[in-house]
Image (cartoon, rainbow, N blue to C red; front, side, top):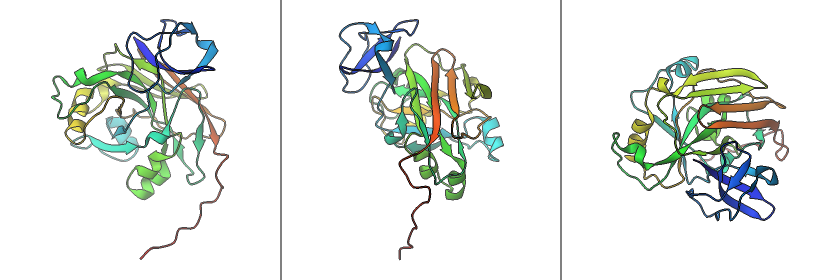
Length: 268
């Protein structure tokens, strides 16, 4: 089942998608959030897709593919490396990724995202997937130069629009071995499989839930395969995951911010 969020002239609705992805239907299963269920079926062309969930938190995993860790000059850690992205980074299918003037190197990272379906703490790895509502595509957009200079991830990962999410939540996916790809302007850059992750989805959920309570609608980004590369003005980036679908976003410079960052005074 594919469920998500749909904006039309008469409001924002929780919906289910037909098999062809051409119509939205009243959902048999509601996702987390306050949006009402669509009352009657209609063509998808009457509105647009939004990010399928508004997460309370986005928990990301760094260096979860050996080849990606190696291309950045890192090793895979002995336990999952956790960091957070803010909810304000989330945008939906077709929304523009904005390049901040603070960074000279913004990169794509295609990832399988897990959407939590129920409140969970201290999950057992053997049953952790029971807490999952479904799966979607995520682009963990990263200001790589800032990530490296800061030595932690908050600024480099946290800009507005740095978390495209969608197109919908697939509730019937086996996440153990699906293909994850990323293409920019039609050229394939990333191509991996979730079977190559150092830590599988169940292990990630068990690890994270020992640290923080997972709430319905929270999103877990499971790491990216090798092949990350730059995003430039005018690019179109396309994340595709087998069994889910396609998340596509254009890229542009942010028109609302000055080209030069303000000076920062040194506190005492």
